[in-house]
Image (cartoon, rainbow, N blue to C red; front, side, top):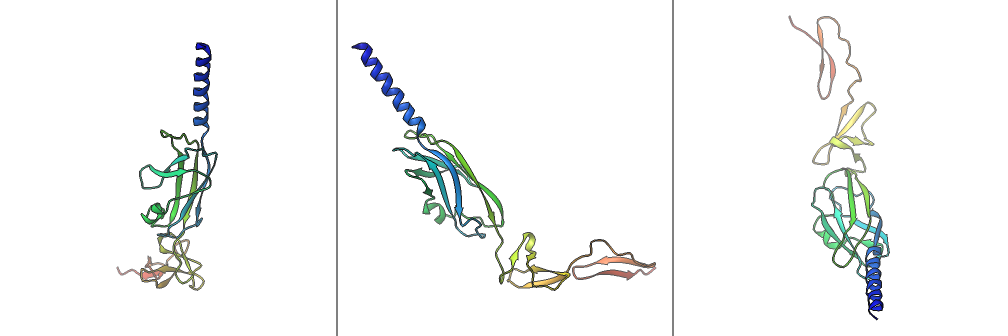
Length: 190
């Protein structure tokens, strides 16, 4: 009888440990929209398998923020909480490329496994349908050939000439000069 009780206890313990270890595995993470604009809120969707009855608790590593609890998935796919978005978490104020990582967390109730990373490319806002690259230089500029557009804070666009790839050779008694709007040779006064 004592042997049977030990066997039942050991079996129950192993079954509980096995069920705990098998609960929830994170397999992937995506954002919607895929390419948000600066300051635009986006949603995170986590996919996984077998969250189990206790759920799959997940942490998030978000650029510029401390490791935080994303939530607990009781089914997959799991969408980020509206609280994260309304608190300004799920948005980037500046253009760039960022990585967000979701990590399975071990809690008293669950042992979520795995992790997944998503790369988020935040594009600069369009001005009149014209996209901006880093430094305010306009991509798909309305400026004439040989000129490039520079966006102003007001939303206006200024066109300035492209600088030559090499400096021009100036004749004697002149020197090369370059400004924002011109290049050339100017007379040197001796």
